[in-house]
Every structure is written in structure tokens, then in C-alpha cells.
Image: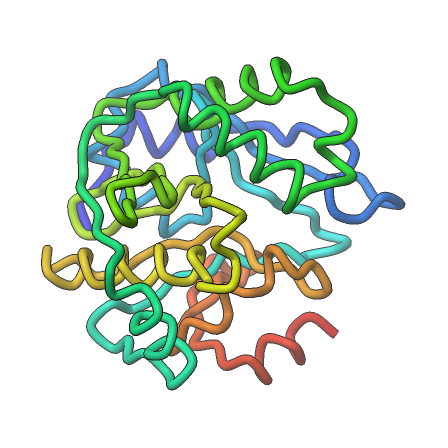
Length: 254
């Protein structure tokens, strides 16, 4: 991992915590370290930021740190050690006709429609608060306000858009920012297939880690990440990564 400058280390260590209502537990507040990507050329520091638990949404990098909760566990896959399980092999077989290409992120009407449909299906209660136009505004800020090192993977089936994924790249690792898929294809497990495709791509590129974001006990659309094994989770109180099995992770969250 590239050594970070003294100036950037000082900047990161002096970040203040910002508190807001928690998106996952309605009876709690969340605390995050947040800063704007416009402050630095961050590509040389991406590996450090990913390994420190930082995620990105739009132009903001953030890291959850709630000392009284600690349910949000950053999760990563050691690409060299990853081997698909039987279920994941079946998913790959079901998607044999799907192909992808990598390009610079570019929004389109087709992607906007798929994003709105995805939100209405996968995040019903949250998306119900917004109009289609408002959701598209969120999409634009969240997925298409990116630093230069970000790329997009577009997936196609029978030459029709199947899904798309925004990915941040470091020198040794990648971080999956956000992905969207055709909800009419749920029986083919497109979300799983897209992660498996990113894993294969990362291996081919000789990268060390894929960061999938937070896994949270009891939150289905967050806890699925632990199915990609062997994985590691970040112990926030010690700033150390530890090997995680499904059973170990459940125990850690008790």
C-alpha cells in the first residue's frame, strides 16, 4: 500500500464526527467522518481509505463510527483466496449469456428508468418518499458525481441492459460503490452475478482486495456480503482487519 503523506494523514486524523438519524435503526443516531473528494487528488490514497473503512457516495467519502453500536462492519474479500461456493457457481451458470464492458461512468435514460424501478422494488419504504424525478436526482449525485479513477461496468443480456455498477479503483484494490439491476431478472440473481464478475475482473487485474461496503446484522440488503468467503471485517475499535466466517460475524455482532 502506498505510504500516505504527513499532510493527508493529519487531515484524516483530524476529521470530526457528524451525527444524523441512523438509516438502518430508527431508534438510533449515526456518527460519520465525512469529507469532500474535491479537496484532494485521492487516487493515490484510495487503498488507504478503503482499508480504513471509508466508503464514497457522490463527491463525499464517509466512514461510520458509532462507539455505542458498532453494527456496521466494513467487509472485504481477499481476491487471491476467493473460491465460489456451489450456489455462486449455479448463479454463474444461470448467467452464461450475460456479458459486460467497462467504461467511464455515463448516465442515460435507460439507466434512469432501471434505477427508479430498482428503488421501487428493492427499497420500497424509502423510495416511496420520493417522486421519480427526485430519485433520478439522487442517482445522479450518488452514482455519477465521481472522481477520475472511478469506472462503470455495464452488463448486457441479449444486447439489453441487465445492470450497471459504479466502482472506485485504487492501486491494489477496488471498492464497489453502488450497483443496479433489472428487477425483472431477480430469479437469475443478477446482483450476485455482478459481484462475482467484479471478483473475476479484480483477479485478472492482479488486485488484492474487493471492498463491498458495510454488512449489518439483521439488514438483508446489507448482510448478504458475508456470503462471499473467505472475507474479512474491520474491527472499528482497533482499526484492524480480521478473518470472518458467517458464524464468527454473527457472534461479533451479539
